[in-house]
Image 1: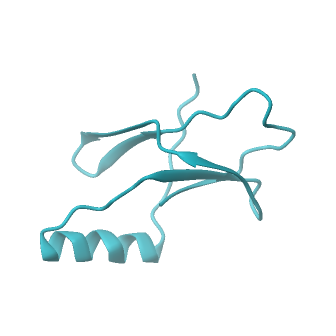
Image 2: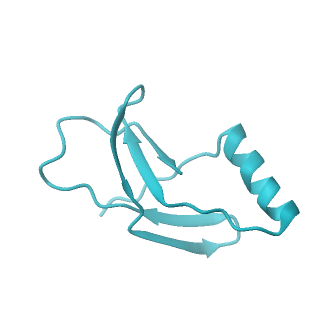
Length: 77
């Protein structure tokens, strides 16, 4: 199974900084894939774990009947 990586946006960095400053947790529940411009599929997170400091492993399942597009981006919410 391929493993991809993502880069934080400025909004993501702010949310993480706020959570650290306030001692709260981020409630990450959904993940999307995009074709670079349009959200193509959104689902609940299947697996979420901290691999090491600053590194998350986030997984969602895309059913086999969903497709017809190239994945160029991801986002977690």
